[in-house]
Image (cartoon, rainbow, N blue to C red; front, side, top):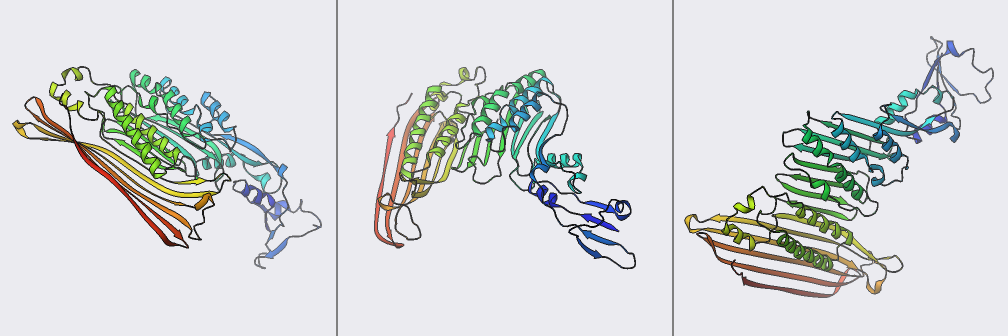
Length: 501
């Protein structure tokens, strides 16, 4: 006879994210140990009278909490400094923030690789292991449970991926996965890895090591609970004569998190940041470095003007303050991460080119945007207003040669805002189902065009055209029907002659 025993340990194991095991015993080996008269016999099902065999399903028995203990499994038993960091961060518990779980790991991996240029990986997992010697849990193979838990660290994990490219064509890739074990089939744990495509030179190893602090600082800010912060300056400040670029990507699959995804690209083709989270999403893309002849003060003046416009648009569109702060930070940090000019490049710049650049913004061409929902509450915590704001801004510079006659240069800055809000009256709680609220819509746009004409070796003309259009509509709704409607248009258009330099 063959018997299959199932106890409450299977249920508890499933609840703990473990795969329960089944103990299969032959009647020949268990007959001697079988109880003489079970008080509560199982149900016997006879499968084929000719063979005389049967299957017995034992009645599940309750499992006490004491039958399980928290167990930590390691993929490699070699405990080094990185393993110590992993153990420390994992020990903070499942409620730890991403910043807590990432702390120190990125920099440690880069520093280790620079000092010992060999591939490295390690994984640690925590899970509830059975301790009772019941028929199911007692027969569970500890190594199999460890292996399963280590594999399940990747299920629903938040991941960090950094790819560094050298001027010689080599790549270094770093990965960190962290999991709080909250998703079904996952394990709480950490997984790290760093590897390269080939042997690095001493200069390349040194440049990699110099990124350690910048990576830790970036992850510390991005993983902050509640409100992520962008601290990208050190990570983008690398030796471009040795490293050609890098890409940092983060994905957090858990819903409604402050940080859902993030990407940073720095390379010869430009710089970009994209980010999504509970507050909304933003993107900033610079097509190249700023013009060589543009001074730091000229760039800063242009940045200050843009930041003021961002604030004005956010106030008019009632955009989420945290989202706007991150957008402004990303915009400023990308523009300030200016690669050093090549030796002699500024000296070799012609007088004509200097004059042209002095009439422009001094910033690299770019596209940037943010969008997100927002809500406001009264002093009692009730939601009084909800809405959404979408903002876009960009700069594009074009040059058209007229042959011997000179050149026509145009730099166009465009800006647009679209926002909508639904607001309760008298600071009461917003009730959309009743249809009693005020609806406000904003549609604004601005275009600033700088036109420059050159002939020979000098600027012959320069002017700046500004066109602004504003429209705000307000509707008072009572039981979903518009009772009052108001439109407030605005705008202006003017042209300025720029002083030639």
